[in-house]
Structure formats: C-alpha cells, structure tokens
Length: 482
Ligand code: FAD
Ligand code: EGU
Image 1: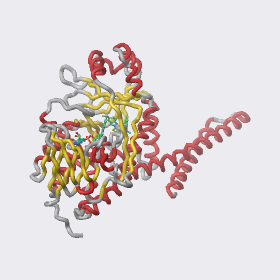
Image 2: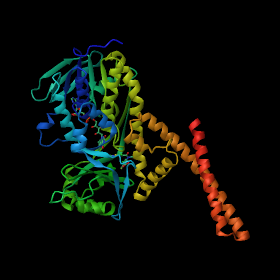
Image 3: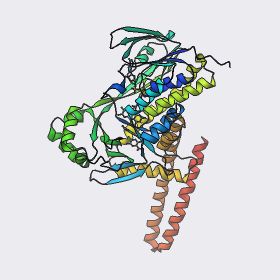
C-alpha cells in the first residue's frame, strides 16, 4: 500500500488527560498536525488539581505506551514505586504478604498528576503539536471532523476542522455523546452501588513511610474494602470503597470512628483520628461507572479512545493501562496500513472493541469477587489455588491477573482462557469430590471390618493422589480439545 503523507493531515484530539496527551504524542511522532484541546487550565500551573485518584497502579500495558514516546524510564525508574506484593490487613491487625509474581515482576505506583505533566512536557516538544488549555468541546460533526470549543477564559467560540477528530475526553465523553446519534452505534453504561473516597496516610514527622512501602495494601472486608498505594513523598493514598447508603449512614464523628474501630482498627492511628474525621467529612463519595460501546469510529473522521470508549470500574487497576495500550494498538495499525485512515479506523474498532469489552467485564467481575473476600485467608486461598494449578500445568494455566497485569495477551484471550480454566476447575473439583467420597466409603468400611494398618492407608492415599493428578491432566487435555 502506498504511504499516505501525514505531514499535511490534521488531527484534533479532545482531552489532554493520560490517554489524549499520549495519543497526541504518538500522532505528532508520525508527522500529523496535531491540535490537543483540554477543558481544564494547564495543570502544571495549578497548585491543586481537583478530581480523581491521586495515584495509580501501572503495569506492562501502560509502560509499553510510555516507552514508545521515550518516557518509560523517566516515569517508572525515577518516579514509580515498585509494589512486588499485596499486603493484606486483617481486622485483628495481623498482615500477610502475597507476592504478585514468582519471577519478581511487579507493578508500580505512579502519581496521576506527575504522569500527566510528563506527557504534557513531551507533547510540547513536538513542533507539529499545539495544546489549547481552557477549551471545552461544546459540539462536533463527526462526519467531517468539525469541532467547536468554548474558550473558558475569554468566552470566545473556537471552531476547528480536521481530517480526524479523536475523543479522549473521559468516562463522560462529549464526543461519545455525539456518536450516540449514529445509526448502529451501541452503548451500555452501568453504575455500581459502591462509591469511593480518597483519604491520606501521612508520612512520619521524619518523612518516612508508616507502612512497608513496596506493597499494595488491601483491607478486604466483604461489602467494604480499602486499598492504599504509596506516594513519592512517603504518604499513602487510601481509597475506601463501600455502598453509597453506608457512606450516607456515617453522619457523625462517633459513627465514623466506631465504623473504623470495627472494620479498620489499624487504619485509625495510621491516618490519625483527627485527620480521618476532617478528611472524611470534607470529601464526598464519588460514583463508579462502567461503559461499553461499539464501534469506536465514524468513517475515516472520528474515533473514541481511553475511558471515552471503555470506562471501567477500578477493580483490576487497568483503566489507564488499557487506554495507553489503545494508543499502541492504533499506532501499529497506522503502521500496518500506511496511515490510510479509511482502513485504519474500522480496523481499530474491530481489533480493539473485543479486548476493551473483555477488560470492562473482567473489572466488573472482579468487583463482585472482591465483595466476598473478607480476610487474608480467603484471598490467599484463591491465589494459592490459582498458583497450584499454574505449577501443575504451567503451559496451560496462568493466573488471570498475571495474564492481565504482566503480559500483553489481548484481554479477550485472557477472558477466554479464564472461562476455560473455570470449566476445568469445576470438573476437577467435582471429580475430586466423587473420588473423595469414594475413598471415604472404602476407608471407613474396610477399617470397621478389619482394622487396617496405617501403612495401607498411606499406600491407598498415594494411589488416590496419583489418580487425582491423572484425572486432572485428562480433564485439562479433554477441555483443551474443545
Ligand atoms: P481522563 O483521565 O478522564 O481524561 C479526560 C480528559 O478530558 C480530562 O483532562 C478532561 O478534563 C478532558 N475533558 C473532558 N470533557 C472535555 C470537553 N468537553 N472538552 C475538552 N476536554 C474535556 N487505572 C489504572 O490503570 N490503574 C489504576 O490503579 C487505576 N486506579 C483508579 C482508581 C480510581 C478510583 C478510578 C476512578 C480510576 C482508576 N483508574 C486506574 C482508571 C484511570 O483513572 C482511567 O482509566 C484514566 O484516567 C483514563 O484516561 P483518559 O485520558 O481516557 O480519561
Ligand atoms: C483498585 C483501586 C487486589 C488501584 C484487584 C488485586 C485497584 C488499584 C486485584 C485503585 C485488589 C483488587 C490488581 C493489580 C490492582 C491484586 C489485580 C486494584 C490497583 C485482581 C487507586 N488490582 N488494583 N487484582 O491482585 O490484578 O492485588 O485505586 F484489591 S493492581 Cl480490587 Cl495487579
């Protein structure tokens, strides 16, 4: 295919968040004339940035995106805090570490604002990329790449026409709203009953971490859950997840403290009693939305990426990672089809939507699963079972979070393997059950009749174990074939 000239092709990117800014860099690198529009003022000039979570877990998919624009080392090596294990906090104050990976792979806690600023600095280095802050998209015509913005500082209306308009304007996307008027555009959104609130565990007066730093700390409590990620300044950002009615039921200082005393006793002194009360009542719980839609494109002139295309609940730590991987996938297709947008945009929708839908589903599924994990024993059991099967059949069984977090296997492949694994697990468990009952019957009967020696019982159990593993392998092979 003939190479399409990019240097006189114009692109408008809406939203200079984590995904829009990265995508603008990718396109500028390919030679497009890029205009990036952002509703907020330049966050680099602000003291405090309002809005969502302060830090995020970054893994291989996000890193691949940063690497392509030369930022991986800066973000990960200089500013990322490695988390090689989870640390589970029980109600009785005991803790337990559960590593992510035997090969020492880890995830990184990065500051949202820091990553966004690093990306904006990189974006400004391209002569063919212009950033317009304080510009709010007010309307657009997707068929011809036309967009109107309100300059919130001057009150002026600004119009821009481009060859392609890319909506990276987040979970409540305006570009997506315009797409909803297109025939054959499918859309689905779900609010979960839980909200989240961010609290802070400060550093010690000496400026040190009050908990072991290289962990993702988790307080699993069924309906309630808390998670803490480390910050560069040795503080922790704690995120409390619980149903909105419970947030609303905590209206006084006493109610709040007794709730924490029951569920998170160790967190009271970590956060500090006064700070907990002050921050909890100064903040409000925020909602979490899950969005699926398709296709992501209109002709050769409009495209959705990042949360605008696939907002997900945060229970897999993949929203940003997936959005940054979007940029990598689009770049690969631009390369493959020589920047022919009329081919690339439909190809991108076809390739990316099954994967984005898979991770949106996995995140929701994990939200349900996390709700029944009450303590480290349960959490550990799930992980141990996964790890055991993975060591029994390393070729076929990779724990799901390992596939999602530490590989770039397409998400739909991860979910496919997960349902295969669930099927195998079901069969194996029911066969183990049948065998177990059989063994029990044999043992009690013969024992009652003859009073067997313990060496016989040992031999019998060896045989049972061998049978069990043969059946396991047979079940696995059989399922693999269908
Ligand atoms: P956004 O970051 O929302 O950026 C959109 C941008 O568009 C914003 O700057 C906004 O101002 C701008 N904009 C919106 N409307 C307009 C308009 N009309 N005109 C102009 N500009 C506009 N992901 C992870 O990978 N790891 C995690 O650990 C993780 N933890 C999370 C924890 C919580 C509590 C939440 C809520 C999310 C978490 N995520 C995590 C998900 C992650 O935050 C998002 O997936 C990511 O921010 C998406 O980036 P984006 O650029 O698509 O959207
Ligand atoms: C939630 C909120 C532990 C940051 C999912 C694990 C998350 C993050 C897990 C938030 C959990 C949950 C995984 C990672 C990560 C775990 C993961 C969740 C980062 C299955 C800033 N989740 N998160 N799973 O395995 O794969 O440790 O707000 F509690 S990182 Cl909910 Cl790997």
